[in-house]
Image (cartoon, rainbow, N blue to C red; front, side):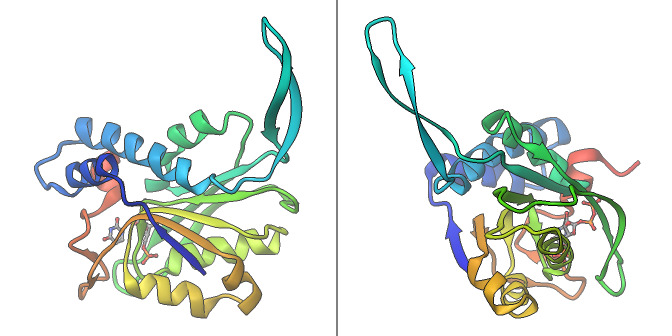
Length: 212
Ligand code: PRP
Ligand code: URA
């Protein structure tokens, strides 16, 4: 697994806003959008491209376009908070939706939506979820995406727990784990007794969408 922790002053500032318990929804969402922009920018650094030519008002010169259409896969609900930023940077991307709810007691995810293309072979895939806690939700998604032919998947997270990173490494087939990239703004200290990330930022879905 390749782990890339984005180290940038603007990312650190946005993460601080997200962590602050006093940040209300109307400031949380734009801060998440800004941070997701930076994370997706880094996550797409190695996207395969192909050369094209482009004619400027003065001359014809070399240009670049993506070699394949990417797929972005937000994990509902909280991953939806990262989707507009991802689609702004990747306007030709397809979107796959995976809806999961983590059981409060067992911490295991239950799937309520799996709207994923049947054949992901050849498409760069970006899994969007602000929180990588136990890793159970990400593992569920990664297995689904791998079953549909995805290779070299990138998980884009805001905060990752060490326990979640270990779970991804040990819970996937060795070749898939070796090809996996995780891009995050921070790797935090640990999980608490209720499998929340400490210091973390609390319940990402509730902070984006509210409790009602
Ligand atoms: C949260 C979060 C992740 C998951 C992480 O979602 O958004 O998807 O928990 O936890 P894990 O790594 O231990 O699986 P939740 O199930 O609470 O749903 P929500 O996004 O709708 O709030
Ligand atoms: N889900 C969240 O939203 N936050 C955590 O800290 C862990 C799981």
